[in-house]
Image 1 (tube, rainbow, N blue to C red):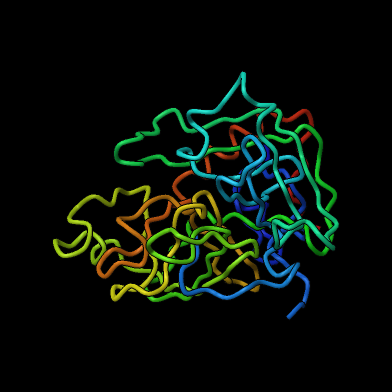
Image 2: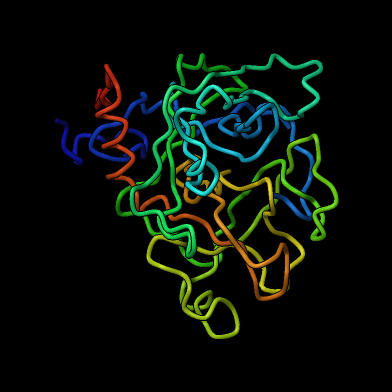
Length: 282
């Protein structure tokens, strides 16, 4: 087993064992649930995937390795085996029209959500999907890096969300084209204040967005990425989890805090993978 100190390479520390080469994650081609967001060009967020259940988009997810997707537990906890054949993962897409795209559709081999997930509080809201076959990386299909174990993101840090969720608070319209929006991180102290979420934010959650509303994730964006650019690398800091309404004042988006689940993620990948590539120092 490789220790933490040996995993540094261009700021690629993400855990004891990783299932991808350091140089592969967190980069994107140089191409030019979201309310108030903008359309996205193919390859801008190459780790973004769409999770389909019974031929319908239900949630987002993020590629972290050739066969592994991170999403939210609430997206999948009622739909595991024996319904795995009902799931499909679409990668390398920005529109659900599928026209003019080199669409990658993957079957799902296994779904594992955190054993402590609470469907009332949404605590421990994280899950992993293992694909039947490894993804082939390209400009439009690439993994995102996980955060470093000791990485603390300051309040106000500008991060990004993306997804195919509803674009109006009344949930009247779900776009075919992937949307993106910049959202600043909000301190847990402020998010747990009496005028916001009044103590409902646990150590495994984080908040991002605007206290005056206007821009937020919404239904259909669940499970998708909250990414921040640090050390010249894009890192999966959060997973779209929950919120009260969409883009409501004093109700910012709540995200699963990925740094709290690094041990769990690496353990699940390790015990469910035949071969693990260690991050090399040379």
